Each structure stands twice: as C-alpha cells, then as structure tokens.
Image (cartoon, rainbow, N blue to C red):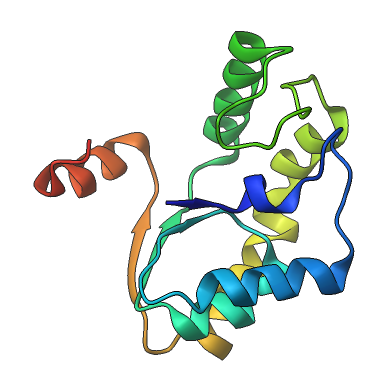
Length: 142
C-alpha cells in the first residue's frame, strides 16, 4: 500500500516542491503493481492513466468531517504510520474547511479526471462505511 500522504509531506508538515512531488508520483506509479491511498488532484493524470481500478470513497461531508475529528482527537500529538516523522496529528482549521468544502470544490475534479484520464477504469464508488465493508468483505480485507 502506498500512502501518498507519507510521500507528500515533509517533516514538520512542510510542502514539497511541485516538480519533486510529480516526479515522485511518476516513480511510484511506474512500479508494476500498486494500491495508492490519497486524493492529490494534481496527480490524477499520472495515476489514473496507469491504474486499472479506482476505489472512490465518495462519502457525505458530515461523515468525512466526523472521521477527521475522531482521528484528530484520538491521535492528537502523535504521528500516524501513514505520515512521515515529525507530522503529528493536529487540530487544523484549514484542513477542516477543505473537508467541508470538498463536495463543491474538489469532487468535480474527480469527475472531470475520470472523464479525461479514466475511461478504462473499473470504478467502485463507495458512499458509506457500509459500502466499504461490503466491498472489502469478499476480499477478506475488512
């Protein structure tokens, strides 16, 4: 599993240079087989062209917000395994705004990218935790 957050963020929540980030994603996507976890719309063109399947977690905004707040409160001050060192969980108002505004501002980018780069993809659009559990159950990965 490739957690894009792990590869994107630099210690102390620093952002990477745009060209370095795209080069890193190109290298990650060039491997023969992969599963990538993460949004990062600025790399849809790279990833969707190389992928065969897209598992789209298209949850309601309140569900996403609840998940983020729960993750923040339970892991506050600790670095998750899917992040690089020195990126502890924190209460981040701009990120909460991003999650809140995602359906209007960012969801259309996913739809557009699927149309532009993903016509060949098998798409599993999961809209709830229940959908995700039902999707994963036959794989024994729940």
